[in-house]
Amino acid sequence: MPHLNGIKVVYFDLDDTLCGYWNASKAGLRRAFGEHAPEGVTVEEMVIHWAEAYREFAPQVKTERWYEPYLTSGEPTRTEQMHMALRRAGHDDRTRAEALSRAYMLYRDAELQLFEDAIDVLTALRGRFELGLITNGPADIQRMEIATLGIGQFFDHVFIEGEMREGKPKPGVFARANEAARSRPEETVMVGNSFGHDIAPAIAAGWYGFWIRRDSDVPPSAHPNTKPEDRPADSVPPTATINALSELLPWLID
Image 1 (cartoon, rainbow, N blue to C red):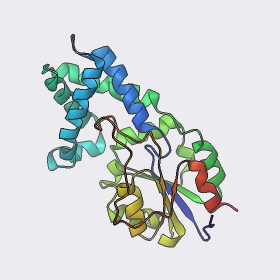
Image 2 (image 1 turned 180 degrees about the horizontal axis):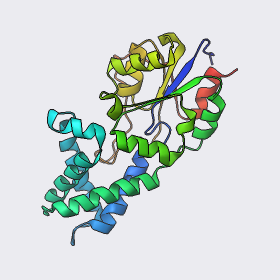
Image 3 (image 1 turned 30 degrees about the horizontal axis):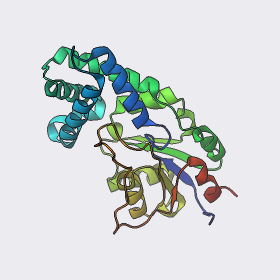
Image 4 (image 1 turned 180 degrees about the vertical axis):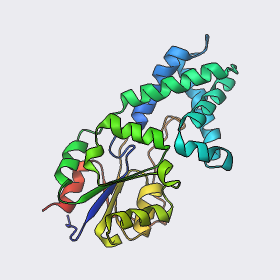
């Protein structure tokens, strides 16, 4: 295994890189629907309605109507999606949608857990390199996750889509991260689970890109039997594909 020399800063994605966001999302949905699903509609049916609503609504989140409020708070889009799921179940109930939205947010956050090697890896790298976090999502939700996980103290730089007003894979995000760390691209590492949002744009920016793959990396909105994301056949390969955060250490530490 080659060793990378001259690295100054290591940036991490958050969701499904350091913590199991999709696992927490799936558990949070089931708990929320278990409490607030309409009478006569099962939890399993509501999960299906929610997934269908998500697939319909997700492309709208970055539109002019929704993106500005989404950057600050996850509540408007989360509640709208719950309302869409309820309508699919035959219940046009805004009040129930608001209750489901709150419950889902709280239960998802309560279920959120770091992957078992995350703290050990962050501890091993801390002090040897500057560490950073680059994460997409609303400002309030991403800050909540960082606090829930108790990892804020590890990072010299934190870039959140909702606070930057732009997110990965836009090149400006990676340029701002280099500027903050006063690092050159060839001194910079990105670790992430999304090839399209994390690895491809990092490689394009001249960074090293470590693509972490896990079987759990499938959203609750996915169709049944969906597999984790594949790398496009014509894309530039990552620096390395890893299956655990601990596999990063030999590349960086003698």
